[in-house]
Amino acid sequence: MRPKLSVADDRLLDRIIDEARSILATTGMEIRGPQLRQRLLDAGLPVAADGRILFPADVIDRALASAPRAFKLYNRDGDLQADIGDDRVHFTPGSSGLKVQDHRTGATRHARTADFAEYVRLVDGLDNIPYLATAFSTEDIEPNISDAWRLYLCLTNSKKPVVSGAFTEHGVTRMAEMMQLFRRDRADLIARPLDLYDHGHRQFPLFRRFLPEPARLCRVGHPG
Image 1 (cartoon, rainbow, N blue to C red):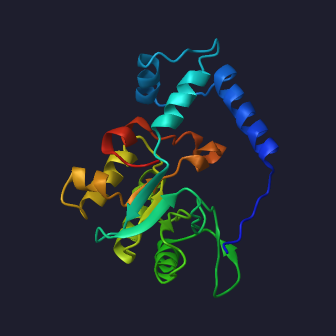
Image 2: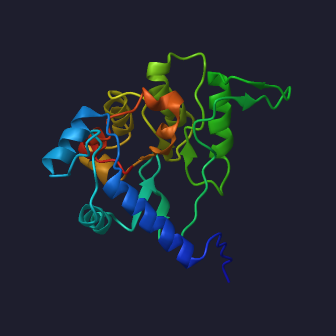
């Protein structure tokens, strides 16, 4: 028998979902990417007085109905690595850490490239972790290219797929081109994705000015 952990009952979950839908419909979202904002306006989404894009209930329902219930990630060689969806649980080793604890000295400090390479090689050897995450940035690399640098280190030190994210508008396209090097062409990368883009950490003020252009994800075909 498989164990199951429930931290909230169904009534509370329904309330959380209802309140989230209400916020999307009445408060909306501030969309800073100009291309994504225009796509939403072209689709007919309403705009609040303060410029936020509103998401009415019917728009949310159509979006949920069109989203896949599951998707798969493939490793660098193109072999199936992880089947994500339904009740399958996966764990990734963190996201967007600002500092690391040096395992040799015990000191907490800013990370460097050597730390990231060590981390990737460690996770590569953990069978219970099916895919990597670009878990922290390194201080010895220019911030505007650090998103691509982290992905490069993952791709060159492990065959596992990656959960990552871009810090700049041009970062998405650049990172997609890097991953396409391990597929026959763009269509093959779409069919056998190597990366999952995670936008959750953009909520933090530190990354707010680096908000990427999610519309580019639609064009390159990555799950995110």
